Length: 125
Image (cartoon, rainbow, N blue to C red):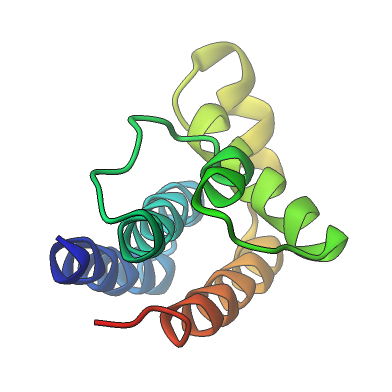
C-alpha cells in the first residue's frame, strides 16, 4: 500500500511539472496538491499500517498520521490545501487563476518538491 501511494505521488509530480512547463499554472498547483496528499497518505500508511482516511485537508492528514510539523510546514500545507478548493469552485476560481502566475506557481512547485523529498525520506518501505 505504501508503494502504491508513492507511485501515484511520483506520477503526479511528473504531471505537475508538465503542466508547469506548458504554462497551465493553476492546474499545476492543483496536481501539486494531489502529489502532496498522496505522499502524506503513503506516510500515513507507513505509520498506521492501515488505509488512510478519505480526506483532502493536508494539515489534518499530517496530524492524523502523527507527523510532527513546524509552524512553517503547517502554513505551507494549509496553503497547498487551498489549491484543491480554489482550482475547483467557480466562485473563487477566477481570483486563483489571476494569482497563480508563473512566479507564484514556480515558488510553490519548488516548495511542494522540497516537502515531497523531506517526507519521502521519512517513509520506510
